[in-house]
Image (cartoon, rainbow, N blue to C red; front, side, top):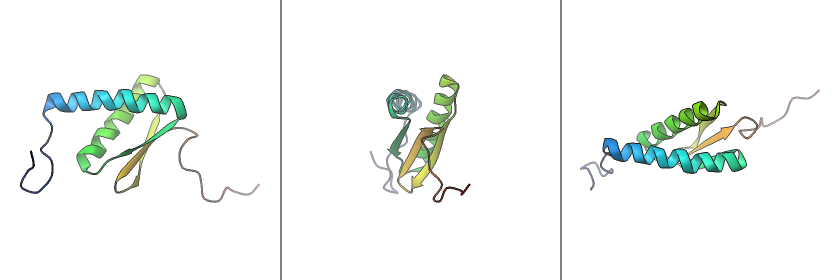
Length: 92
């Protein structure tokens, strides 16, 4: 179903809970394996969903899962040490 504006119909509460549970599991497994994951997020709702998943993973693991927008279409979730590196490391 498409709304008149051309976007997808919003998820029901049950669908939203299932989507977040799947993301929690799938993204959590990938982050646990390699320390980071990149995931598409085209709408504000998708970005909010990923932020919530990052917060839930942080609470579950007892360590912060960082999240940042890589561009207009993708978000990166990562553990400390797997995020962006400074462009030029400071000199000693």
